[in-house]
Structure formats: C-alpha cells, structure tokens
Length: 97
Length: 204
Image (cartoon, rainbow over all chains, first blue to last red; front, side, top):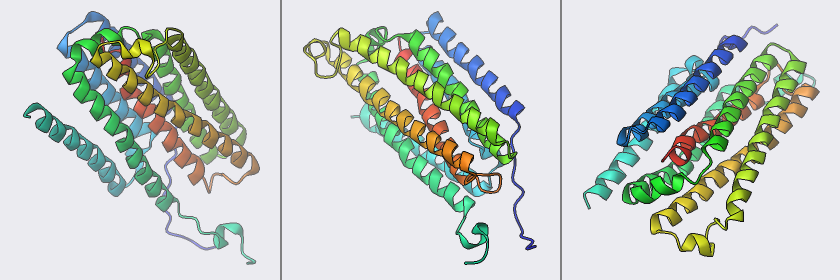
C-alpha cells in the first residue's frame, strides 16, 4: 500500500449545516421585519448588513471556507475587497462629478 | 494501463477546487457589475426606486429566499453523505435540492407572468411611459432575476449530472470533487439571491 501524505479531509456534520440554516432563516426574518418598521435611510443599510452576515455564513460553512487553506481563504477575501474597492471608486467618481 | 483507475487517471481535487473558485470570482463580478449599476441608479432615482419596488411581491421574494436557503443546506448535506459513503441519502438530498430549485423556478414563472399580464415587461408601451427611474428599475429587475434564474437552471442540470454520477459510483467518498464543486456553484446562486432579495424586494 502506498502511504501518501494526504491532508485529512474534513467532513462537516449534518447538524452543523442545520444550525447554519436556522441562523440564516432567523436573519431573513429579521431583514423582512426591519423593512416593515421603516427605518428610512437606515433600513437599506440594515438590510444590506444582514445580507452580508448571511453571505458570510454561506461562505464560511456551506462553502467550506472555514476548513480550507489560508491561500484559498485569502483569495476569496481579496476578491470581496476588490469588489468593495470598485464600488467605492465608482461612487467617488459618480458623487464628485 | 493495468493499474486501478485512481492511479492512472489524473485527479487533483485541490486544483479543481481553486479552478472552480476562480470561475466563481468571474461570476461574482458579472453580477457585481449589475449591482453597481443598480446602486448608482438607485442613488440617482431613489424616489422612483422606492415607489416601484412596492409593485414587487415581497411574499414571493421571501418564500423564494427560504426555498434557496434550504436547498443550499440540502446540497451541502449531500456532500457529507457522499463523504460518509451514504449513496442513497446523497441521491435523495440531491433530489430534494432539485425539487426546491424547481419550486423556485415555478414561483419565478408566476411572478413574471403576473407582471406580463399588466404589460410590465422591458420595452413595453406601459413601462416606457413610466418615469425614467422606474423604467431602469424594471430593466434591472428583469436582467438580474433573469440572469439569476438562468444560473438556477444550469444548477439543476449540474445537480442532475451529479445524481447519475453518484448512482454509478463515479462520484464517491474518495473522489467527490464534482459534487463539491457543483455544490459551490449552487451556493453561489444562493449567495447572489441573498443580495438580490433585499435590494429588489425590500427596497421600499
């Protein structure tokens, strides 16, 4: 038998996935309720913040990033930072025109 | 070629995964560009956007959000089932995922056809007579949800392929890159919707 230096694969438990789903559903309820209350300008900010938390949960647990190597995690984080920069620079250009 | 398939074939799960992520990055910027357009026009025509977002059915939007979130969990679980060598459970979970995806598409169909009944489709005379911001909102609404729905359809095809591969044993506990990467794709579809939902349906 060939013994290979294989990285131990991580198997996520069904229970953890179920817990993440519950968290996601609670956050969805929050974002729906918050828009009912009408915070005005704040409601968009709150709705987007809740969406960001949900996306983070999906990335970390469902998309397995929690157990991936640093290289992949940095790459994903980097892409989101890059997109944030694109948004910021577009608005700097657009608002100061 | 007298060795077993696992030795003679080139199999690089780490490489495939990085390749999949690179593809997902391009997808992110495909939708990201549309989000950017949305953000700028929402800023410019905020009153119109507020007004027209009322026309969207928030209930269908919320329902579809829940459907996609649950389907994301079931596809994640199906990977665990494959890794634990539980073929039957994996196939069942994939079937549930596809069913939920179909529920999503049926909802989308009703939602769009309801709009079409009121002649609210891009370029229709009714839409073209609306204020500028509302025309833009409808354009973005159809473009973004349409592109997203196309991804859901592609996801359904991918998941179906996985069912056959799991059944035939091509995808198994030692070799599960395909289902893992298909799962990543499906989660991306979910991820995009998580942003689309508050921006389009809760923008009032």
